Length: 400
Ligand SMILES: Cc1ncc(COP(=O)(O)O)c(C=O)c1O
Image (tube, rainbow, N blue to C red; front, side, top):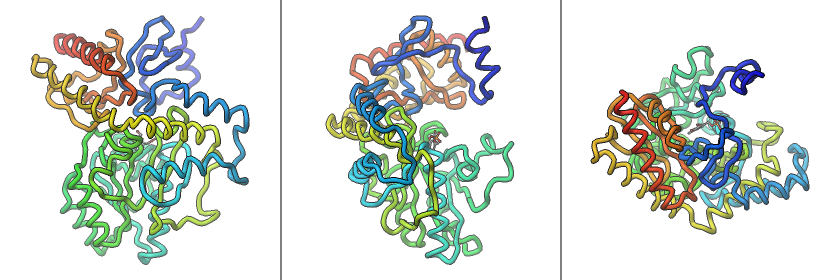
């Protein structure tokens, strides 16, 4: 009898490097493996499981909707997408919403909005400025926005019309906006870059982007796919800066574990008309019902406050490990989106050792461990997480 990994190798395209563990169920911050192990999940499905695994209120809302109406397409009216959009708007800024199924799809829509806006209002300007270290998705358009050959080299040619500038350098953005040979229609950025290793752009920088976009008549697109949904101490990571975007994209935590993406478009950029864009599953009632339940629980339990407090506790705990001589050099990020910088290239080894200690971690490159646990993680679970991380760092440090 072939193992699951062997059957997977025969049947699924080889696009992922999976850890040698099979997960079968989950509850709160814990997942259960087929071999009986229980693991503390500090990855949260890569910043998706904001309320943990199988949160009863999300399961109840999705289950109720599953039994009532699973799918209709967008040929008809249904209430669930409207309810979700109302909650999304209330959490962020006034505007209207396009619903889809993933982060890449949301960003693809944002790019199309910027291009149409450029045709209507900027004489056909279409260049979009993005930042080095960005990650906006895996479709051809979002790969072009991501601008990292590591992800895009085998898939050339990519759509043109993207220009990448160094992260953190407002002067470089301004120079791009001033360049009339390549008129810029939008600047697109993640308030906290996730996939590059958790790098916050900083509030002052975000305000700078807003001012530059205003001054040069460009749209500001903020990709909150990873940083949003209360994870960083506010509903959306840009909010402490007070720099409101024209277009904001969301996904990951939005559906609490079901596929759901969204683009929130302020009035100024609201250019899409019937027939311009669409998605068969976009606004799926089950995903939207789950999403509304996620908004309800986060809002009711003020989980952004919890993310901030418990995130500080986790950060302090990890910085304490550095003082004990473990190979931690810094902790980046905000709230419960943290990047633990290591002083030597052992991140994949730390992840393996952590698995043996009963905790799920995620490595970005070989010097960063990303932590994006559920926002409902308890104080005791944070303490346990730090203790197990210490064990993993110790063993990986010794083995290296
Ligand atoms: C900031 C950001 N944008 C977009 C994406 C793409 O989202 P998805 O994988 O749902 O297409 C990701 C995924 O990691 C992301 O972190």
